[in-house]
Image 1: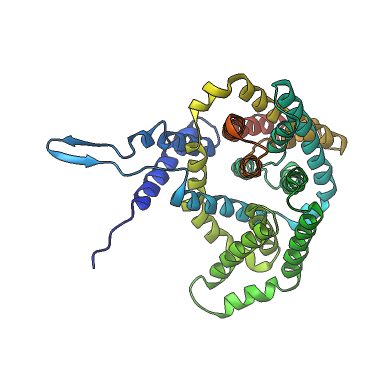
Image 2: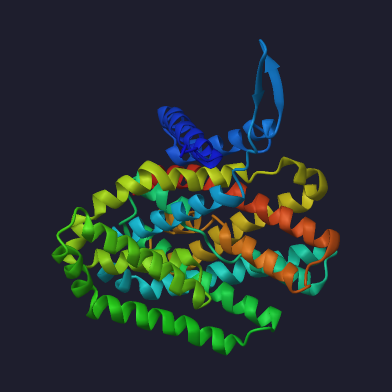
Length: 401
């Protein structure tokens, strides 16, 4: 039997190599390496290496045929999603649960500010450009949920994830995600918001009950197996189980991953697995997530949505800085810390796209309007992903946080 290597393996190898090269080059100019990884994704996307997909030509009598190159969908997307799960799992492992509890009240208020302002600005923008009320509400909803993967990576790189602003960003991002899910349920009217709220409560009650009551015993079992890295294996299994459980309760899988890391990180045994998890995450899966983000760039969308996209992108940035920043300031943070919190809440990704595609699935978005909103949403995700690391570094540097 001849073992053949699937094409996806070659694509992954190219992605990892380029992520490291671009990350190294960006790091040389004193910018977060994550920017380089996203740019590497753009390089292998449809406007770069991906343009060669399926082409064939002859060189000195040797026929060269490029495989189907897709860094956005299919098998590669699965690896990319594992990347964001690892990133959030690591951030949970390195987050102090007692400190997160202490910042919970502030995070809640900041999350509400970060929901209300972008939602209102999004609705106003949609109405101004002639969209219906329901479509405008969808636009506002796409701007609610923060995707902290990029912020977390940047905060880690700058060694400020464990500061009050860093912990506050993590807590607020979890809360605004939940608020966004509930508001979307109200809009769709297909699932009772009460039932959805109950599911979310069930997730957190069960997740933290298991964590606080029996997680040590589960990890003890991993040690008693006495096989190489058995504790690591059990921990990764918990990561996947929590992620799955979160999706079944109507919450994104990354929240499940973060909660799993948070709970395991609160145990003494977490110190035995943190470095191993980082090796697997940073060495393989996490770069693939940022490659996927960069490869999702679609420049042709600008030709259709133009000014509208620029307005929504601006609103998405201003809404979080103002909505979260003002509440952070009122809660007692310094000006620099408040701006850092607002800046860290800027990125949008999976929940924004999920909101737009779900609205399309249920007929709220259709035809050309659906294409325009989806294209705009993707561009918002890409632009906020690219500029957030730069803004965080500028704010952190000026504030000496």
